[in-house]
Image 1 (tube, helix red, strand yellow):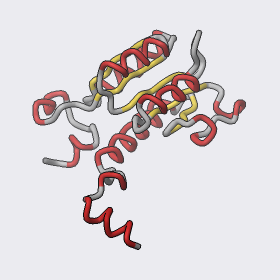
Image 2 (cartoon, helix red, strand yellow):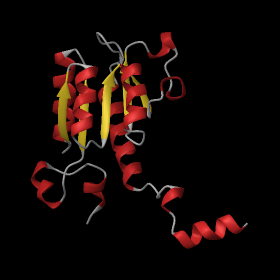
Image 3 (spheres, helix red, strand yellow):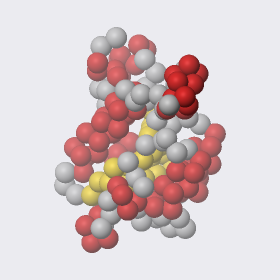
Length: 160
């Protein structure tokens, strides 16, 4: 298998070789949601969208996702609250927070719990696609957690 399908860079015609990675987009702005969906679908990702963080939690509880991309400012529950809830229910699920207020609010990966924070700007599309590829590629290449080591290796550690 080539590197392109692993990075999510496959063409639509190549999808039969590999199951596309699945991304949940969350934004109460339907125009922004549609634009991001189109860009990511053209890159070969399977996209599910919702306009509410509460609906996103329900969707994540019933389907597998490789990544969640959420807006910051939404009604009822904002993107930070959604990410906090996802960290409890799906702690290994990568998240991207999008906001037009990144700098004024001091939004960072450390302060938000997101895997990445992207400012809504003229360069957003390029930054979003690079970040999606990077997070999904690192997820594929991630080493097993230490709790998944073989029992003999774990026993050897306990003896030390």
